[in-house]
Image 1 (tube, rainbow, N blue to C red):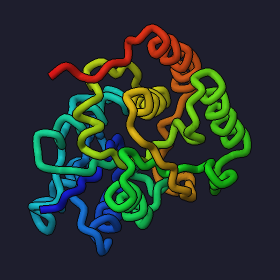
Image 2 (cartoon, helix red, strand yellow):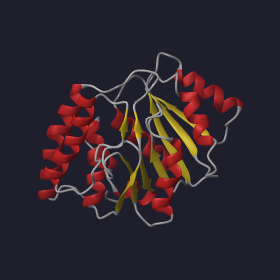
Image 3 (cartoon, rainbow, N blue to C red):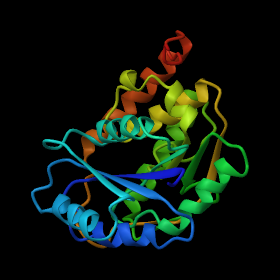
Image 4 (cartoon, rainbow, N blue to C red):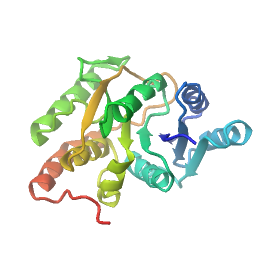
Length: 247
């Protein structure tokens, strides 16, 4: 039994899913994987189930949902699934190799060895570590993070990062049913909520590589949600509405 599980949300990732699963399982540190698939019509879930049955029965798991319900709700679903099982460290990671599986042990070490509660795989804590992104998207992402810090006074530089390790107690303390946002703003909301609730966050510098296979799920509505969501987050903090989950 591993103490760590990697959550990988998928929608039409047949080009990447087997390779990313094998890359994680080839690491010296043992991780489990939960794929949360939103009804991919390209057969992503079938590939995962084949690997479960043939090679990785006790390490690989899948939850299938009916249709695209949003990145945030996929992770919330995965968090709740993991919290019903004895995992101490719960990770978020993309399926498309934009996050390097070899960095998973570094995020784990930040929490397990150094005592942090949240470890963020950060593109911006040591300059701008992004490969093969169009310059417009680099600038949009970078200045979005600056905007978040300006509005919230939150010190994390890469608030929209989707490569994260959470200690179990963080996800047990956050009221997951009150997390409001589904896209980029979901990532901001989770980190900011953890910060407001007093958890220690470390940024671990990583290199983000734009996907080579498959289609990006980014769209302009994601940025709109983030822009207005940040103001809402700051208001909720000021009015005392960010509270631990009631037992």
